[in-house]
Every structure is written in structure tokens, then in C-alpha cells.
Image (cartoon, rainbow, N blue to C red; front, side, top):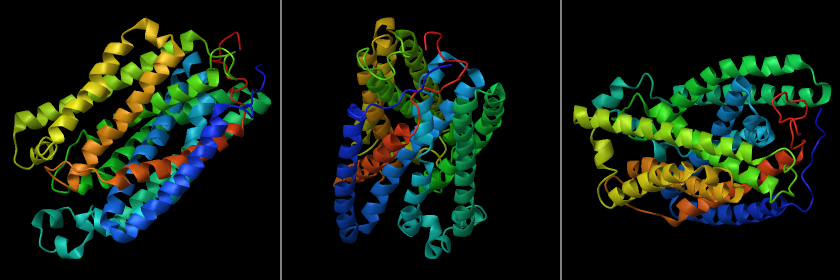
Length: 391
């Protein structure tokens, strides 16, 4: 049995928590002012920030379930980081409400005057209508919240009792949960991102979105794990060895390759088909300056991390791996920016100050809640059978 390990009161994450709250409140205050001046731009920027931070949460839930199904020390040592991220889902549900208030500014299919004069949207109206959109959103959050709640509840019970049946319960729930979360996140990506351009569609869009979420969530986990392990003196230094960081680096590389495969597959299929209803999506993202973002994205989100992560030495050096992971997180936001923003400004690269401030505002508040959840339990999942022996 492993002893409980709590976050020290002088740890850097406490400073990040306090700084995040201050920055979040100030940034959101400025965005609120900007919302009065330009409500349309506010909702555009808010959606972008929301999708980014939600991606870390859902990606963490997916990685947590993968660990419960596959096992392994790599997941046991960062399990509490993943669980803390999933326990921010109630916050994300609350932060979703402003998007409902801005539906008409975000989704043209939600405006009756547009729907009345668009035959294509009329054919899709059975699915793309406001009441059904709200029902689906409620279903998504219920599924995510239920899966996360049971995994966290049983994890805490495992700490207290050590009952081996709880390990089996979490494994069985995760098997079905991967399917349920995968399906709901697929349709959520259709609803919240792809329907920004309702004339366009892609059957691979859901897995492409989830692939990006796994990359960003794994990179975030590596950064937090590096802070907790420190230079051998952190609270997780006793359980996290270079072997675990090596495994996390390999998983990050695998997720990056998976995302690249999905992105390349979608591009090749649309390029080969050359259909007028499909190619505008890529034309809007390769014209008016967007081509530089696209090329930079492939370099920063695939080529550079791929080449660096091939090195065994980098994956076994926590600080170096964390710096790379931090760069991947930044590239993850750029990837989402490239996918979402051209829907509002097709063929024209535009960057608004609210894009950055909403990201900081929501991120500061999210980080505050994340660290608060992390402090509430032992940093080590006590009685996890996958923990390294030296734990």
C-alpha cells in the first residue's frame, strides 16, 4: 500500500493557481467590455477558448479510461492529474451557457431568416435545429459527467478500502465509457464546430477533433507531471522515474502521429474527390494568409515534435520533455484556431485581441479549479495495482 502524498503548501502550482485566478478575472472583465462593443466577435472568441479548454478535459477523460483498460505504471503515476482535470467538467458545463446565448451569432442555421432561403439547410433541419441542439448538448454533458463522476468516486473508494473489485469496476466502465464518450464527442464536434459551416461535412471530423484533444491533454499532463516530480525533490519524485516520463513521451508521439494520420486522410480524400461542396473548407484555410498558419501548424504540431520525440534521451529528461509538451499545447491552440476562425472570416487571416484574452480568462479560472481539485486528494492513487514497485 502506498502512502498518501499531498501537494506541499509552497509548491509552484499554488502560485499558478493564484496567478491564474487574478489573470482570469481581469481578462474576462476586459472581454466583457469588448462584448458590449462587439458582441459577435466576443462569441467567436469565446467559442474558440471554450473548445480549447474543453479539449483538455475530454482528452484527459479519454486518457484516464485508456489507463483503466490497458493498465501500466505510466497511467498510475499521473492518474490524479487526469482525474482532477475531469472534475472540472461541472465548470465547463457552466461555461457552456454563454454559447447558448450567442447561438444566433455563431450558427447561421439557428436563424429562421437564413433557414427560410437556404434549400440545403432546410434538408438538414431535422438535425440542425435549436431544440434538438440543446437536447444533444444536455446528453453530451450528462454522459461525460456520469462517467467522470463514477471513475472519481471509485478511485477515492479504492484509496480508502483497497478493494480489488473497484479496479475491475473502473476497467469495465472505461470500456463502455470510451465508446460512449467517443460517440458523444464526435457528435459534439459536428454540432459545435463543423456546423459553423453547415454546407460542409466530413465523416472523419469527429475522430480528428478527438485526436487533437488527446494530444493536447497528454501534453498538459506531461507539463503538470514535470512540475510535480521536480528535480527529484517534488511530491511525485518518489513514484515518477525517467521510465514513466519515457512512456508518457512515447504516448504523446503516438497521439501526434494519430492526429496527423486523421488530418492527412481527410485532406487526401477531399483533394482526390475535388467536389465543389467539399473543397471550400480547405480553400478558406489556405488563402489570405491562412496558408502560413497551415504550414506552421504542420511544422509545430507534427514535424518538430515528431523528430524530437524520436530521441530516447529527450523523453527521459522531464524538463526537456515538458518544454516540448508546452510547445505542443501552444500548437494545439493554433490548430483549433485554424479549424474554427476561418468559418467566420473565410479566406482572410484575422487575429482579434479577444481571441487571446478569452483564452487567458477562461484558462485562468479553469487552472484555479484544476489545482483546487488536485489539492483535494492524494497525488498518488493509493492501492492502484499498476503503481511502480518502488512506490
